[in-house]
Length: 273
Image 1: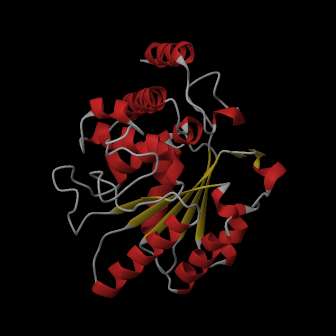
Image 2 (image 1 turned 120 degrees about the vertical axis):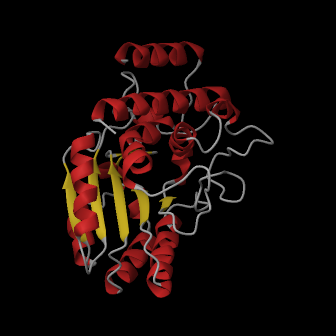
Image 3 (image 1 turned 90 degrees about the horizontal axis):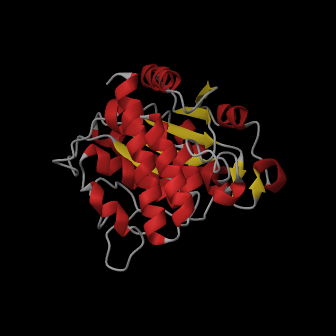
């Protein structure tokens, strides 16, 4: 896809995030918006997936380790055709298959149930090990938050991945510098993130603008070309990206827009078209 086509998809993904969280009156828009370009590029260009066959054993796997950003994953999957876009309005409703955190048993396209921070990357490492063991060619991608990587389990998983040279694993860190209680510096910064992953035998790619498709595309190409080590892509993003009053505002980590805010945000995204 061209960058213009990807940007159009990303706008629709952002609208889907807002539709879902507004309808639910809860959810996590901030980190979903910061990771929109990452998930859009993964599902529309980078990964081998087929919405008509979501359980294809040959498909690439994606694990949303920061599972609270499910609104972003759902909006991306809907745009890719895994389920109707209209269903995004059922987010977090009783009886909906779009729950507050991803559920692989109910939601087409979800490869791993996540939510407890730190556990998703461990599952992704297991998927990568399984592919090596069985001689399968699929790649596994895991998206972590920069607050999430304060969890010790993340580094246990990284140690295993590095020691087993899992070059079919790509970990992406959404480094938007904000978590639920404030900036990562105020809470418990994991910086320098790249150097830590290097210490665990990862090849590291630093992306200056994680909301830029060209930079992300180059990073994923470098990850695919890297042999003998897993790759970590550290993406510097903007929390709440695309909605002016949400950008770089920690309060939008886990808060839904009210009617007025929803209308303003949707109008801003329409003007970008």
